[in-house]
Image 1 (tube, rainbow, N blue to C red):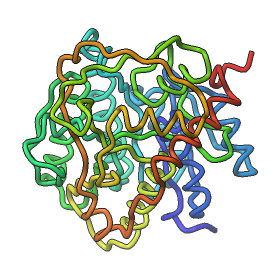
Image 2: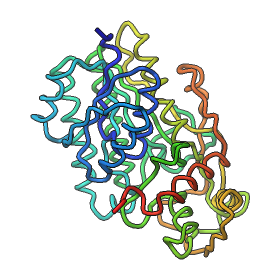
Image 3: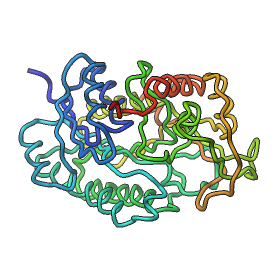
Length: 346
């Protein structure tokens, strides 16, 4: 019989980061159950993960706001913990539809936590975001940096963090690790799974790759007058497979604890900033494609620079990002060039 510490519920496991983490969990000998409503993900991603790991994924289609569905899942399995990816994540959409974001991201997490408590599962790795730092005053950003938010998406992540803090204070059995991601990019080196945004991409890398593959005409770069190396925004891009390994490292850390850790936020980033033009140049070099672009007005709420201090992740979890911007561009181009329409294989 397998150790109970091996079984993990992965909410949102059919999504971009979730699907890559499923592979990393399998490679680290964790058993997993994936729970996803497929609202912003694809069943095809789960099929491909199953092929890559050589065995079927235990997949349940369900919504984290559905307490009865969650109860059935928890009753059928003895989980050590939960990795909670399920959430809406488009900044622009959150501004247009704030109630949808608070309902899904905040109410959904509250429902999940209630069901976890009912079944005495107290270990959670939460998909948080660097957006909880707002416009940083000092770089690199540490876990102790002030938190704020400039949009409903970021505010929903920050609200969940506050809920986790209060929960940990109320009951010392909880171990709650919000992983604050910086800018996940890249794809699995097989090219079989990657980022497949609905409609027009919200994030820079899939937009670049869709221009490179001819799906979009040109890239719009929002602002070229920031106080940065070349006037364009600077971000901490991290390869999605490095990010997936960060989740495994967090779980490994939890399995070694004898009692509740409380609330333990950890940054996952490379600690290095790359500008929009630097990323564009690297992608052009890797793909051999000319990527037309134009400068347009800054977007409201965008900040000049944002990159992490990842010292805490290395000290506590033994984790450090290892893949370069070139690796990120190569793997993105490999995925996009053989899947020009993403998971839509019709």
